[in-house]
Length: 404
Image 1 (spheres, helix red, strand yellow):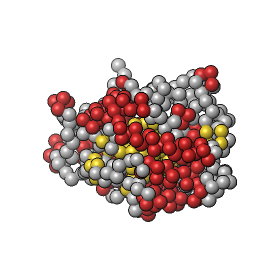
Image 2 (cartoon, rainbow, N blue to C red):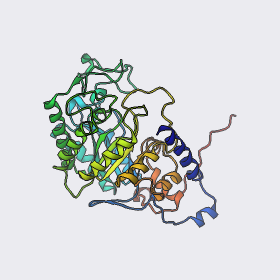
Image 3 (tube, helix red, strand yellow):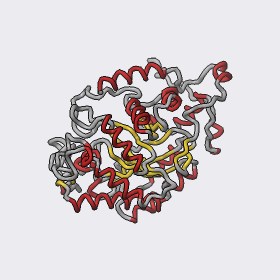
Image 4 (cartoon, rainbow, N blue to C red):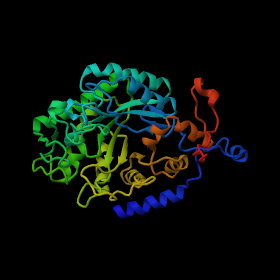
């Protein structure tokens, strides 16, 4: 399966081409491509929410909160991507419990007091024409760790604000991570309720799209992966048992999340390790999620267990074949994410039916206004904020200055 994915990545990278870049185009090109019917800039209706295009802001951890509260950083970070033309702005992984944070500085939604600052972000993003929502998450055994730029690595000690995480078993992610406590029935039930409470608070903050994080080796993925979940009770072993937690969470969330609003689930399509979670199981789960009221599967990969360098064939569009297969075989809308940088590639993904949404992460960190310039490159219409309209034009090529 992994070898097939690698070959598909190579085909996609070549077939999509790399011709469309941000540099200014010749006049003849601009005349020929002034207005086209772009698939990337076509609207997408999901239940009663219509996204203005197919470019979504992927959840990106900022590790910049105190006690889970959003602040000015989050307003500017997320708001600038709404100004930049994205159709959907999702928060970073937002912890449904305090012990479900990746780091002590993670964004949170485990108390009603968090709603007020989140609502501030929602008001601004929706005022710019973007849908806004949260990615509900629990870090599981990957909780209570230092931020990437901190001096420390791995587990945060109690004296520095750390805690004992919870997980399917007591196995740590790696020797530097904290040793978790295995969840019992009451603990699992409390987490399911916490996801539902997070959905209720998202709605109170003004959200219209909700994503459940079931990927990247965090709690839901830990239950899915046979490499991590070695339980022998009704929560482990068989496919039915390992998928019980995400299905219970989806049912609880759908119980409080309005029918008029779409629900997404992010999944890792493969652990990139033999005998782990794989694309075949992902397709089967996606079918079950569709029946429970999930509208889109946001397809990523990896994160359950450490893998040697070079195991993952990271490259342009390397995860898109997974989204394409889930879309085709599970009959559900999908989003794709991972090293998508070129407008032509994003356009081809949607035009060729590989995915319905293109989630951008690091490329939007580099350029919050990527959608506006991508629309010009593709000859599509995209509304610039009136405050910025005097800057409408092709982006200049950036060159490294020659040595003097």
